[in-house]
Image 1 (cartoon, chains in turn cyan, red):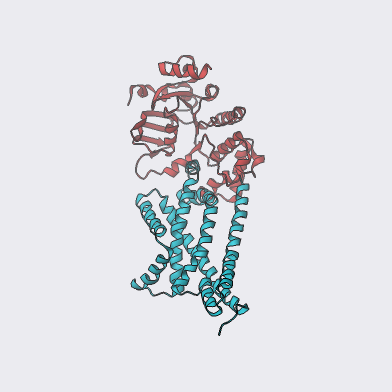
Image 2 (cartoon, helix red, strand yellow):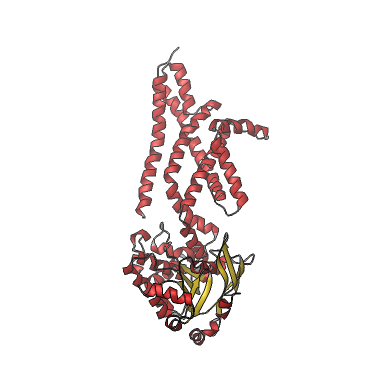
Length: 216
Length: 266
């Protein structure tokens, strides 16, 4: 029996949207934390750390997200770690995000004028205080547009998890399209939902940017 | 050690010696620095006594900025030693941050932290390093901001201030750490002419309080007014070192005369 595309179907898709949002959030939080470490390693005074971080970034920027997710999903069991699908996907997305955010933030850290670190060093501030109080607040501001751009991509990137069989928003849409035979309506709605999820990100970033710029 | 540098001993400086018993705050011996193949500091020997005011001048690229940047380890040296208040730099395990806490620095480009207010700029280091409470740090910051006559702008961000005001904040920020020595790296070179005086006046006020000062500047009026010794550098070497009256009245070295001729007669 062919079902029409109605409220229950939309609700089913919104169930999937919950996964999309949760996965994006988790990937951003864990990927952000790891990405910060990657960026700090990449800008460190210690050469081996810089090289290691550069390789890490290159691996995650140079391979497709889907391949990364497969590698984590099928690779973890080989290492003796059996994880559920969603955990593997979140891990994969977080690693992916850490590579990209690491590179974005490396650039922003390096864009903070040299005089700033010098002034901080001249005051006797140690590495930790220099990074936390002087460099990162300024780097954050510089990185904001690129960071938000990447977050938006990450939200949309979670759709790839559908290919591993995780019923997030795109997978829900596939299922609904299959039983309603109304792909256009289904995918148009899903596109709209992605848009609605990403819009606040962009708006918040614009507001934050304005506020930070007011500081001169 | 070059012959020229060997002649230069602070004990030849009567003014500094009568004011203060020869108690060295900074001692540089046989300091050499290269940038790649460029030899930017050549066998620098320099003693700076407690309370002494030194002015460093010389053509651009002569190494004067590099020299003072070595004193708080913003630049590494390749040979020689630098001793600041008994702490030796340039040895493994040197407590660089301890030295920096004794040495305040003011930069040509001010280098205030743009994301912090004037008050926060001054409070940051005491809060983090001396673990001062918010109130203590604020009191201290206000004290020094008042000294440089800028307390009323405490809540503003650096970008809202003029260059002269920013530089005075930078001086106050350095003073908040209670340094024994203040280094000034061309503090007025990036300023519009009408703002030079307010910064120089602040520095003269500071000099009157007896703090040890080393100042890279081309403001020869300032040098005459506060310096105990003026040092001329060229191509990484200390060429001449003398009290201002002697330095300006009867410079010994040909290169010093040429330099003074260029900057004083225009």
